[in-house]
Length: 304
Image (tube, rainbow, N blue to C red; front, side):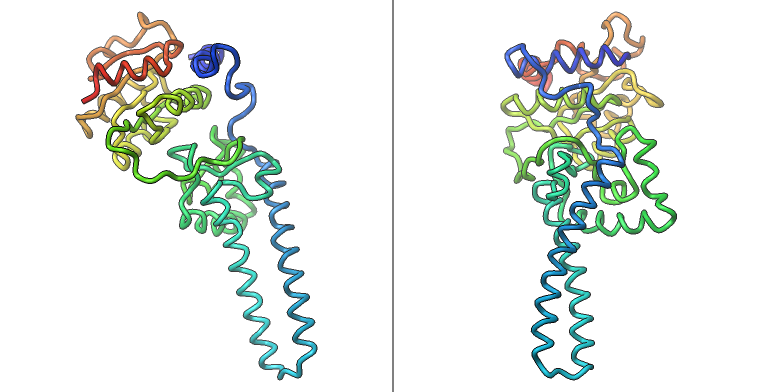
């Protein structure tokens, strides 16, 4: 599939949401934040954390100097102060990452930390703590943990893999919702191109009765997510590197027979792989035809 075809698909899907005029996001802009942007955001946050710690430490030091305290007690207070700084640092990042997905530094740089399986949501609090620890662990071996940002399509560093997170350009994430209503349909998009995943996400968000449960950039990610999250409807790209959509559909349905899988293609439907009709997919759809009405009709026709 070509990059131009993918961008046309994104534009077509987004235009349906905006009255046929403009797309939701500039498709020429990378979705995933690079190393320089993330370093600047972290430096801004480090400045905020340390500035607050210095002010508090100065106040505490002034108070202690006015009291006649034994040296042993002063040493204990110093240890407590160090522990308080650590808790403050972890809490600062963990709270922001697990609520809005944006620290103040992230907000300045217009990036957001999201869940790797659903880029609309922030990560859970425990994973936010793990991510903070991973940032420092990744820096120990000559900053080797940050090299994947330069190599991977989704620009995930060691700490992102550790916490199942991804850093995207965009505003704050939606709040992590409570359990969806039983009537709502959980959708998973599987596509190696971020542009169509973004367009599909916008369509699902705009369609009543559906919610984006997960996103995957490969068949391997899709199968793992399906085992964990059990999506009801899967939009599966036909052509992907390594394992294609036809084989991925076959494997997914072998694991979860009740799943409705729809193959989507940026090319013409008469050029699909010969076994596309025999892999168990409920339907085949051209990406440029994907929109809220099509999504609803697909589920009405093939959903259970």
